[in-house]
View 1 (cartoon, one colour):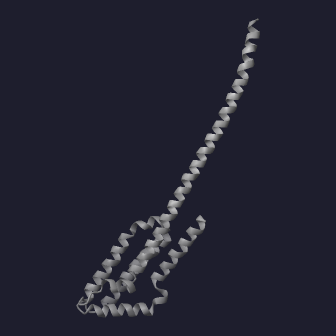
View 2 (cartoon, one colour):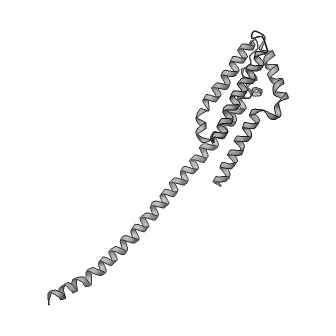
View 3 (tube, helix red, strand yellow):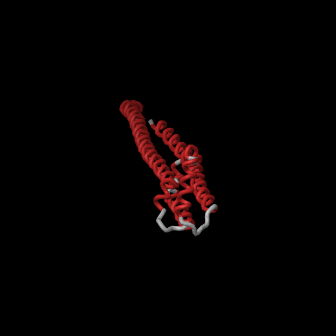
Length: 181
């Protein structure tokens, strides 16, 4: 047997083995790529679910902030018999600021538009309390400030900043939920 016949005999066995090896490498590579993409998708979907949950919690917390900082809810919570106008004014503003600071981190989960609306509501509620308080003697009974704020709210209930903010939060939360469905 010559050298040529020996090489031919070796090639007869190695070429099919190389072809099978290449085919296996391609199949395994495609399988691993598919598995990697499937795992990436699972991680992405899990992240989306977590993000949705956090965003919905942010909308809930901001809704609670708007409700709790509204003078209709705020005044009964901070008013104590015997307070002065200045005391009620100071405590009311401090309560609004504290609530706001407690919810400051929620801004990363909502749109800039909704967050700006929340900030605007806070500022408008504080301005309203200050404006009404300025019409009174700071040493008067807080009952007078409480009454005037309640009267103001009753006469402007339809178009309060709180109503506008709640509507903005509600609309955005619905959009987020529909996008996920």
